[in-house]
Image (tube, rainbow, N blue to C red):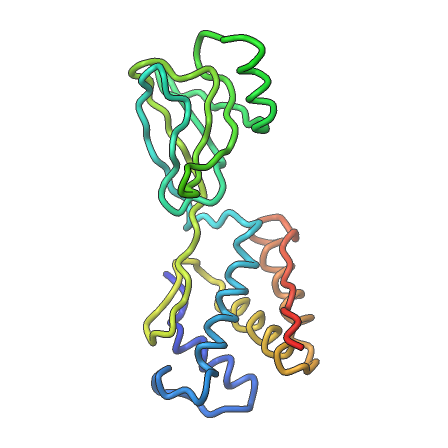
Length: 217
């Protein structure tokens, strides 16, 4: 189950704000209210997905080695590589190293044999990729697992994102941004922080996610 639609979420934010009536469609929004709230929902979406690998947002791509190319591109929209495997008879997981470490390994000696390590890199157009060392041999299968970015909301009534069970976080986070925009302090930032810590501590065993309301002054 994906998130609620943009229209539903915007109306929930409007209900909490108490400043505007409910909308039957986002196109009826006075001034720039609906586009502004949609932008704030996307800011919160950015905040909560930066450090959390949501189970619903994982993807993988499969490449075949040619004995020359060491860089393998991740799924379109890939954000963070989390699991790289090469496949011969059985799967083997590669250890992640920094790009600097990979460069030093390549410069030190040309190592033969099966792939051992990888470093995250990017293609010329900015797509996530991994650089593998030693270079996969001809015919070796490489599986690149990564997290992918969720779909952003648009100013469309039925727009939604794939993330599950984040409606409350999105609404309270948007309210925190709304208060920052209006230079008010109604406690929504603290409420968001409290719900976020409880939700992610229970579900993902981490509290390393923060929202930083914009300074709109």
